[in-house]
Length: 155
Image (cartoon, rainbow, N blue to C red; front, top):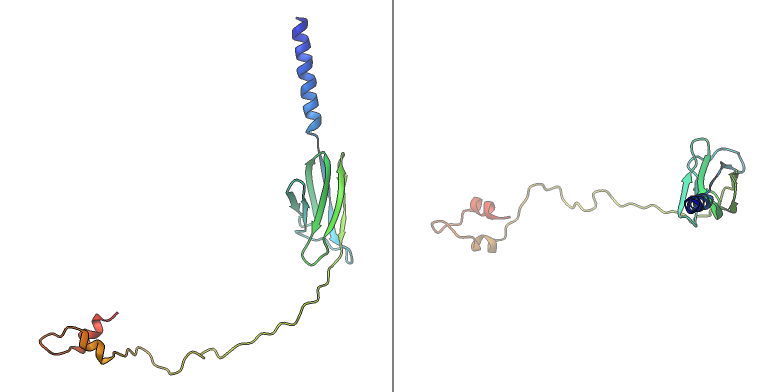
């Protein structure tokens, strides 16, 4: 009986130790423009160590539930500077992020076009030219070359 009690206690302690290792915490917050304060809908939050992430909803809110540990959070949005923050996730964290707009200087774009019908030289439709050598190679019925029959035999 004593041996059974010790075994049960050991199993209980082992299960508690496993559950302590699987603790999960949530990092959440809002993502907004730093100049206007406008919510950035669809901004991405990426955790490089776990290869996972999420996107902000229509209110700029995001939420990620991760195992306990130290992570690099990368927040990005098109047209804004990327924001990176290292977090030590030992409790639930509220992290609001303000992204700065990024300005890019682009070189000029030149658009050119040719005439739409530059490949058309004459307005001919349904014209098929058959050289005389081709007509002579086609078998002739009763000695004479039939032009209509020759056109039908061509591809």
